[in-house]
Structures are given as C-alpha cells and as structure tokens.
Length: 143
Image 1: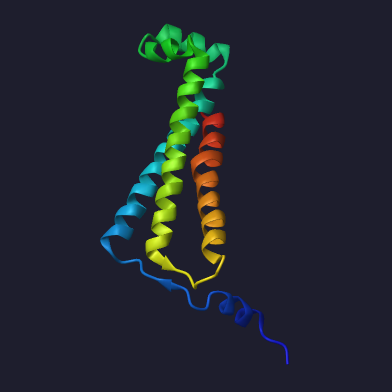
Image 2 (image 1 turned 45 degrees about the horizontal axis):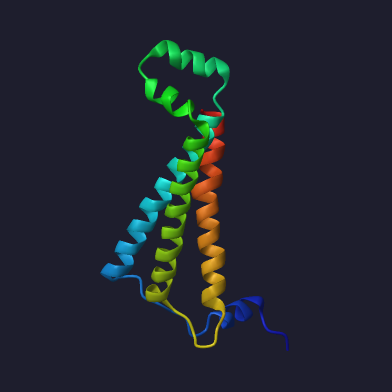
C-alpha cells in the first residue's frame, strides 16, 4: 500500500522540536527584523541614488533643500562602496543571528541535514526577497 504524500512530508520533520517563546528567541527575531529593514533601506538607497535622471538632479540643484544628495553624488564610487560595504555587514549580521536563532529555537534530529537546508532556504529567501529585490524594485519606480 502506498503512503499518503502528507505522511512522507511529516516523516521528514519527525523529531524536530520548536521552542519559540523565550527571551533569546524573541530578541534575536526582533533584531533580525530590524536588520532586514536596514538592509532594505540601504538596497533601496543604492538604486534610488544611481537611477536619478539628469532632470531629477537638476530639480535637486534648484531645490537647495537636498544639497547633501548632490554632495554624495559628486563622489559616486565612494557612495557605491559605502552602500555596498554597509549592506554586506548588515547581511552578514542577519545570517549570523539567523543561524544562532535557528540553533536555539529549533532542535533538529542528530545526523540530519534539515537544519542546514532550513537555514539556506528560509534565511536566503527572506534576505533576498525583503532585503534586496523588493526595495530595489520599489526604489527603481520611485527614485
């Protein structure tokens, strides 16, 4: 007799324990969310700065309120390097905290590669989707 697909999926996660309600888990999760927001702002800023058209720059020059933007755009290599370094530091912090969070919140069976797969799939998906792609698409449309 053939096993039902749901039984196969549930058997993969047999022995997994989840402990979500302690101060370390909640604090780590809050810090990760804050860091993803920072990563999103930085990714969006990168696209917003470098997708400004000459018309947009002229408008900023006339406005005189946003002179800081012009100062940043005068050294584009330095601006890009600063943005990329900051974003990489934040992304590394997110990955380290996510690995810590996974190790204290979810207990996987011994000799299981589920923890590694979980960290790669979930963390990478969240980071790429919410920290990189979505902010860049938004910033590209609203520079």
